[in-house]
Amino acid sequence: MSTDDLRYPNATVHFGVFFQGVNHTTIWSDPRSGSQMHRSTFTQLVRTAERGLFDAFFLGEGLRLREQRGKIHDLDVVGRPDALTELATLAGLTERIGLVATQNTTYNDPADLARRLASLDVLSGGRAAWNVVTTDNAWTGANFRRGGYLDHADRYERAERFVTLARRVWDSWDGGAFTPVAHEDRLFDVEIRPTVPRSPQGHPVIFQAGDSPAGRDFAARSADVIFSRHGTDHADALEFADDVRRRVVAAGRPEDDVLILPGTQIVVGDSEADAEEKARWVLENQVTPATALSLVGQVWGEDLSGYDPDGPLPAHDPVIEDIDGTRGAARQGHDPRAIAQQWRAVAEENKYSLRELVIHNSTQRGFAGTASQLADELTRWVRTGASSGFNITPFLVPSGLDDIVEQLVPALQDRGAYPTEYVGTTLREHLGLRAPLTRR
Image 1 (cartoon, rainbow, N blue to C red):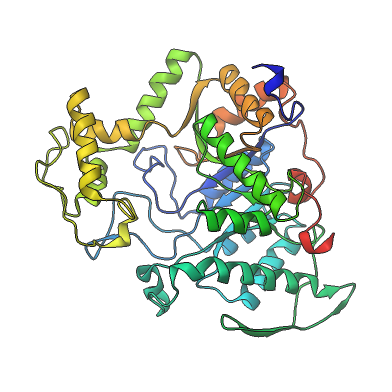
Image 2: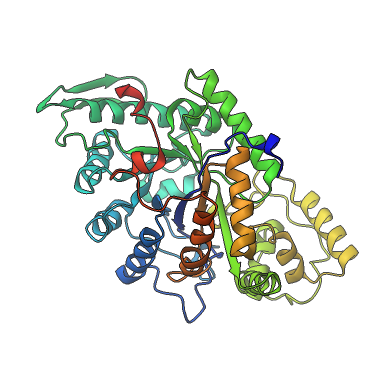
């Protein structure tokens, strides 16, 4: 790595752990996997992360269980306790690590959510964060008797006004006195009297994960941290980070005012060959035969469970009409026949079976190597400006962070690229963030 490429030569790596909601990347079928609903699983994982000086424990959200043709989909992890309830429990079992709750602006109310987030922030001593997400699909809305009520184009407008109102609530309790917050427009009609004072960090830290131009602009104006999907390819991540930085400056903020923590997977091996073998084992256990058929079935728009996963892709073309969106958005905005044509070409060229093709398409999920190799690569990412660190998705829960904490963290510390103790007591201090936007 040339010193000419080092935009931030003294930058250190920030780590968070992402405990996902519904997914098949967690190898939940392994005997070592803990219950996704039991407190002991969360407790072991968050304590390991805190021992490794991780900045944050990040909970995903699922407001409705995944379904397939009206039945609960049983090939992925399903179910998730309410994030704020779970994190309030973990706040009492930890001392320093930040606690990030994914909370939806479409199906919550500003007065109620601002109060609950402020409560977590106060109870944890200033360690709370809010991952702001939006949802516009009708199948999630059906759980709230609001299916399809919010147009796609309106979701970021609502989210930004929601965050603005929440910040006004957090600012309205000042030195023992408070001021009611009143606001009325086409989206909100509220009069809020706060019930919780500000925490030591002022406001919960704001995370945001939108990747569209509207999502990036929203993050540039409102977020403290971006949780991105650009966590595998360095050039792609750097392009994304540069774009975000331009938008942050255009929004009137310092270039470094928003941290970027892409989601990624990390596999640590004792040797390069061991890491490659371990990464292959992870991938093959993530993409089981049944999972491969399900993923291809999303594109084909039909149940392929009767097909041989070790055989070829279906010979017929996918159906074109809209399909049930409750299993995700594998073909949203894409022509399924074009996807099928591309997949067939790759499978024919490489003589892949259906499952082998899915594994091939899933290989770019993160990093694999020895602790030394990984420490060099992750240091390169943060010091060239491609990211501020990483939000790690463990492939096994709750033991998936053990190798990272015991091997990778010391290797990063040896390079001066990772802290040797927590800085301060609040999440805002751990991340090196400035004061909240409205408190500067």
